[in-house]
Amino acid sequence: MESKKRKLITLDEFTIQETRQFPNATGELSSLLRDIALACKIINKQVNKAGLVDILGKHGATNVQGEEQMKLDIFANDTLINVLQNSAECAGIASEENDEFLAFDDPYSVQSKYVVLFDPLDGSSNIDVNASIGTIFSIYRRVSPLGSPCTEADFLQEGSRLMAAGYVIYGSSTMLVYATKLGVNGFTLEGSIGEFCLSHPNLQCPEKGKIYSLNQGNSNKYEQGVRNFLEYCMEENKEEGRPYSHRYIGSMVADLHRTLIKGGIFMYPGDKKNVNGKLRLQYECNPMAFIVEAAGGIADFGNGRILDIMPKELHQRTPIFIGSKQLVSKALSFVTEKA
Ligand code: AHM
Image (cartoon, rainbow, N blue to C red; front, side):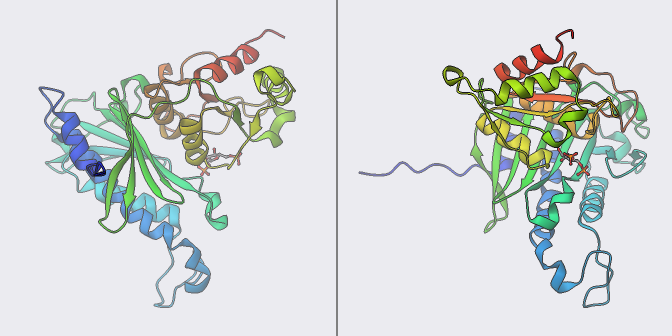
């Protein structure tokens, strides 16, 4: 019997096809995504060599050529900035690594309608143990007038106004997952041709899930509602399939990627000392919330949608409860319960 061959669709081809669905689209967003993917391919090459630092010289030390080894997160940050500065479609960037946003002021950039925010290498404390890490990015249409450099207001928009968001996971394979309002798609990097190829079309976050993910070591610091939910997850109930499994890598991209594919909940709640938790709204939570919602899931800060938060500053933090509709709703019912 003749086998049915699946057509290889690259990220570029896919975004061009997607653009055709919008009559007034100019292709600028596709072009910007291509630039971000290029930067991530460069980062990927360096991440793959991370295990060699002990042979070639530790980060921060000098390598065999006498050049200073650059820390991977700084390398990733510089790479994204360089590529986007040279992109015709990017008016400016904000990075988790930089205190301030950067407005590009060359004649092309001031005419660009998009700004990009990113966490260049999330979960970088996992590099030493060879666990998955990732790059998270999001794209807004600027609100400041074209013709002049972008402003802070362009970066301080609610997540619900995002045009696109995505992440690249540097894992057992390298994957780029990105969402627009049309849906979420995953592309696996085919190293031999250097292209991200469509491997996970139309990703949907399972409505139910049996995996909960958070830093359980912080349990004593969490509010009672969160602790009650953890008790619920650990409690035995054969009919409901409990106890649920606990999985936590401590790398948001990896924990979220599993949640998106297998279902479940990822949480980084606030605690008594850090009421807003640890994760950054603009670099980590909004892009992930946009992706998970586009895949049919929920993302909440404990008292409303993450995507509805109006950011007040670039580096603000927020608690997050994100993942499968049913399990996140269950968690929220505990979290919002009056003591
Ligand atoms: P980073 O920006 O220093 O990489 O920290 C972000 C990471 C997330 O990827 C992860 O979800 C979280 O920090 C883990 O934090 P903790 O070690 O407190 O559990």
